[in-house]
Amino acid sequence: MAMRRASMEEGKTAHDVEEPPPAMEDVVEEPLVEQQVKLPQSEAIMQAIIRSSKPLPINPGGPDLPNPCAWPTRVLQQVSDRLVPWRWCRWIALAIFVGALTARVALIERQFFVAYVLAIYIFQQFLLFISPAIDDDELHTLESGGEFRPFVRALSEFLLWQRSFCSTGAALLATFADFLDVDVDGHALVMYFVLLFFYTMRQQIQHMIKYRYVPWSGSKKGSNKEKGKKDETYDV
Figure 1 (cartoon, rainbow, N blue to C red):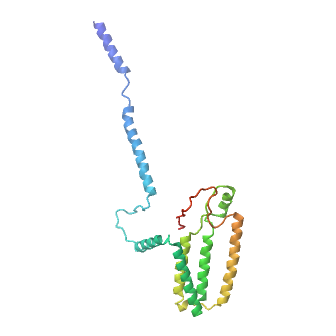
Figure 2 (figure 1 turned 45 degrees about the vertical axis):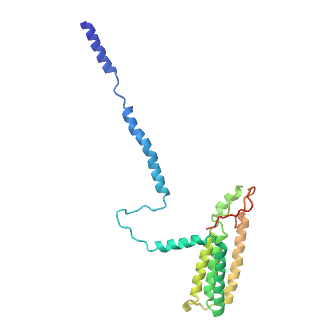
């Protein structure tokens, strides 16, 4: 009996020694599961911060200083957004504005330099309107591929109208300021502008022929468009 009891005690001690300690996997798995759950949440928060259009406050504890230009900018943006669909009305108003400026300069027979500066500025904006927004090196890469790509302007149609309308209004107001009247020959300015116009347009047409593009977006070949539907996209 004593020997059997000793052998049983030895077996128990051997079993206690051979039994491995409790695995740490159960202890480690819980934080791993929590980490796997927290990682997508942190990524979602970072994506929300990146996609947010509102700037992050630099000094959250400090007082917010009022921006005096916020209200006029918001009003002008709202007015511009409402004027975008009225394309023909906008350009008719601009034509009337330019006609009023031309009639005033012809009647007072002064302020030829103001009219010349306005013509040069509008012509420069028109060149941006018919020019591509990409560089010449990228035009080479587009020329090699046969994929259909619409023409992307360097200046949109609405911005062309907006800048032309504002500059025409400023020039009309400048004709009432006598100190802005520069004594120049009006016929010489007209001749110089005509020569500049034809020379610049010749260079622009040669650029179009060289890189094989046109200043408008045609329809894609093979596209089936339903009849009676109009394109409601606006170039802003």
